[in-house]
Amino acid sequence: MSSIRYKILSLCLVLAIVPTVAVSAYGVYSTINALQLNSLKEQDTKISLLGNQLDRALSAVKSDILYFRYSTSMQDLIIKSADPKLTFEQRMAARGRLAKDFLAFSEQRPMYHQLRFLSKYGKEVVRVDRVGGKSKIVTQLEDRKGRYYVNNTLILKSGEVMVSHLDLYRENGKIKEPVSPVIRYGTPVYGRYGKLHGILLFNVSASNFLETLQQSSTSKNERLIMVDPDGYYLLHPDKTKLWGSLRDKNTGERIQQDLPSLGKKIIGLKGPSSLFDGENIITVKPVDNGIDDNRNLGFLVNFIATDTIFEPAIKARKFYIVVTLLTLLLATVIVLIMARKITRPIVDLTVAAEDMSKGNIETPVIVETNDEIHELSKSLDRLRKSVKILMTKYRS
Image (cartoon, rainbow, N blue to C red; front, side):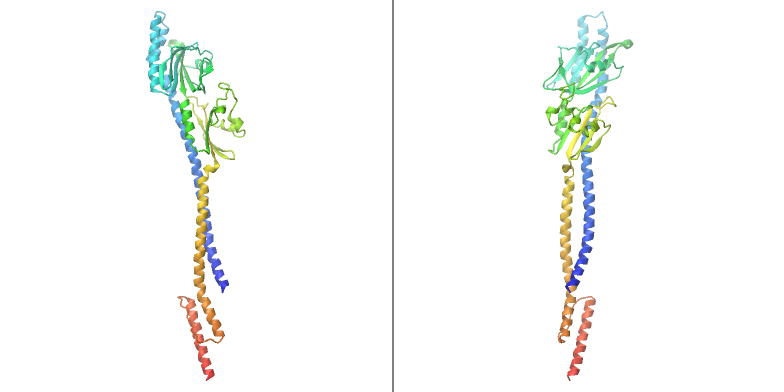
């Protein structure tokens, strides 16, 4: 009889376990996939938002510098500088008006580290610096002749804008301490008959947005860096790796050394991408310079450990395993109770039949169920009564 119970128990457990495991497995698979995709999407969105903020900020520089090319004070300075009849004081007054315009503009646009107008020979004519949150007119002017950004601007046509690398600002040929990373934008200033009079140079301070980028990386399992188009580090948790190009500190530190298999691929990307180095998911976003579509300012590269990315999925898997085990345990208990309930009447009939076989025909066979087993017990009880009548007749 126990074999019947075990057969029923086994059958019911199979019928309970197979659907439960199948549903749980599908739930685990679909949930983990959804969580993984969501985590990857969050990383892509984060790096894209950071990159887009830089793109928007830098895209305004072109319109700013071209505006000053045709400003009243700029054109007045060009005309008076070319007029031999004017006195030195009159020419200086024209410079003063441009300096005041630069000063007012610098107060409104704190992202500019420096606003300058240089002669076509590379000497500063008007200059406004922003230092310590305040803008000031600089009277000690320098000769920038031969600097790459000056030369690259002088060869441009009217309306074209030069954008430099993001590198360290130099004063009198030496890197200024504390370091001040800048991006230089330049445009030539032409007068009548296409005559070149000088160039406008606007230095955008990169310190603020590099600091903002650094603060955006809050997780200990996350690391955000920025490299220039050649792979040299502009932002890195290890300060000794920064500014390794020939233009700056010339340490040679760049991403191709730290990531031999992926570094070259990263600086060759044309758009946002996600890569994998075996331990980290790497999301990359090229940063536009706002001028030249063929050359990026650099690349934002975010590293996040796969354990962090997939942590929600791992938690979900553990949750499903626990729920599945509890469900199976509950199903086992329910099936065991049901198996006992089903087999108990059969056990009672078996006991009654064995008693009858031993000659005990006095005890009624009563099994109260609402199924075929009850009918079987009634038939067995009728048999008992018939046997009892026959035995009574036989004895008499």
